[in-house]
Amino acid sequence: MPRSYPPEFRRRVLDLVKSGRPVRQVAAELDMPSQTIYVWLRQDRIDAGLEPGLTSSDHAELVAARRRIAELETELTITRRAVELLREAVPPKGSSRPSR
Image (tube, rainbow, N blue to C red; front, side, top):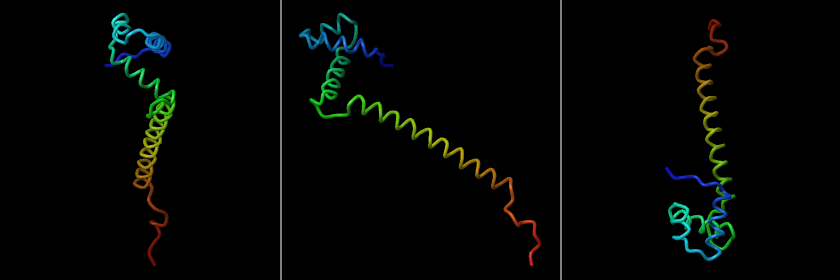
C-alpha cells in the first residue's frame, strides 16, 4: 500500500529539489522512492499551469463528486427496494370491491 505523506512534507521536499538538490539524493536522505518525488514534481507543474493535466483541486472536486454520486445511487437503490416491498405488502386500492 502506498505511503501517505502530509502536504507540508511534500512542499518541503519539492522546495529542496527546486533549490537544486538532485531528486535521488533527496529521496535517499529521506528514505523514500525517488519516483514519488518525480510524481509530486509533475503534479506541481500541472497545478502551476505549466503542464496539461488534472489539477489537485480539480482532482479533489472529482473525488468528492464521485463519492456523492455513489451515496445517491445507494439511496436510490434503497428507495426502489422500499417501493417494491410496499407494493408486495399493500394491495392496490379497490382490489377488495366486488366486480360489477
